Length: 145
Image (tube, rainbow, N blue to C red; front, side, top):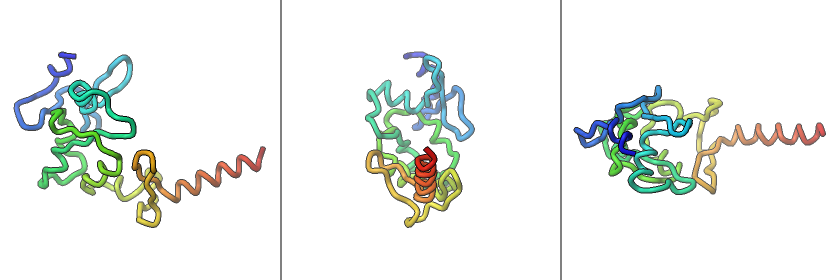
């Protein structure tokens, strides 16, 4: 996929995606009608398939102590040497808390130690409040049958 690499600026240590970018700074492209994140595509092109249950971490972000986190230039990096397949838990722990996404779930419940558990399959964080509400809705549907 040589046209992929044509959209990459390799002039610095981080190779910057020059194509489309999402609002949060991640590069993306369309492949067979699907949106694919550019850093994931770079990983696959060089390293092969992403192992099930793993995410691609920008190691350049984790090691750049001057980067404040949040929307940063590392999200557009597609240098395969800067990309590593890790669990969700590892990826989150390497990040920096800049926006509330790390402090709250998508429904704005606080992700405190008492309200957070980690999925055994992939290490993803699970909001206990959301989980209790989901179980309550399921049980209510079961009673209504």
